[in-house]
Length: 299
Ligand code: GDP
Image 1 (tube, rainbow, N blue to C red):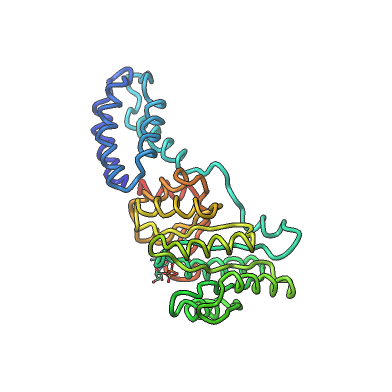
Image 2: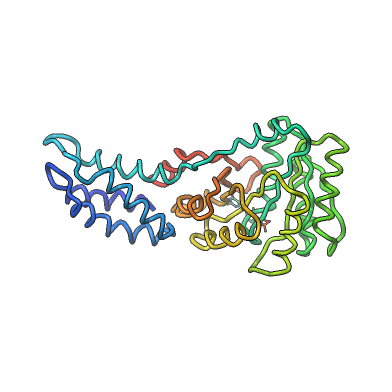
């Protein structure tokens, strides 16, 4: 998205007055920028925030003849974008798990079908095992045909056990069993796979609320597909209303060149991005790093 932004920046720089940057210069350029950002699926309120931040960096700034104007403007835009990409609160999942006195640490995953939820659970299981933690998965999507086999297949590949019941069973009972199993065996982490929602299905939402109410997870993670653009902001808001979301995994960033979702989601629900998915393999999960994201966006 910001590849184009750079082009816009060039004309922006040309418009900026020689000696002092006026509000008018900045406003004119920002109006052009606004469309680019909205088209790249950056949420409206985030666009406004970026504009305000860029303005406060630049308006009234004295530019000495001979200084590199382009650099000043580029730095201001990059700083504004980095500020928006930086979560107000960070969660170090490994430290959190290790510091919990009573095992297991429970993570519930929520998200729409096809967002990459099951793959992300397997990736995270793999990641946790690499950090020396033991993991069990609760196959609490007892709703969608094939969901249990799918999670079992992934789990087998990353060497993790799955606790399952039959289709149609109470998802909360499955999660409860998995937690019980982890307690008995001294397993560090339980990852709960909940049924994905294609649309806001009332029953499935109620079921998800029940899982969260009964199992009291340490962390509720929303898995969102970066390719869904602005739609994932609305999805995240809806899930956040139903069950409070603590953190986000954004998937398919290998395929998304725009990064609008990454800019918008933290603002929309006030929860940090914890990890990003950058491919279909089990190692394609990266800890979220705003500097990496900035690089990708400005690419
Ligand atoms: P679920 O329905 O939410 O459980 O989604 P799945 O985990 O089955 O994933 C749906 C599709 O997205 C699968 O083909 C995954 O391989 C793919 N996928 C998941 N995460 C990523 C990612 O980070 N990058 C890419 N390119 N594909 C992904």
